[in-house]
Image (cartoon, rainbow, N blue to C red; front, side, top):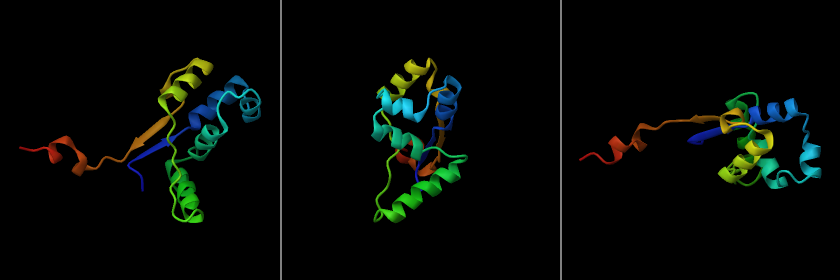
Length: 108
C-alpha cells in the first residue's frame, strides 16, 4: 500500500466541536469541494478503514489511486480558521522502509 497514511478524523472532531458542518463549509466556501472530498476520503475509524476505502476507489476506477494530498497552505488555513495546530487535525502514519533510509542508500 502507501508509504504514508494520513487520517483526518481529528479535523472532523474539531469541526463538530466548533459546530461547523460540511454544509456550512460548502455554503461559505471555507474549503474547496475537491479538498473537502480528499479530507473525507482520508478519514476513518482506523488507518485500515482508510486503506480499504482507498483500495475500493482504486478497484472501481481502473486502478487509479486516490490522492489524499492536501497542501500545507490548506492545512494552515484550516488551522487559522479553527485556531489550532496541525497535530490537532491530522494523524500521520509512515510505514518506514529500511531500504529508503539515508544510511542504506548512501553508505560509503
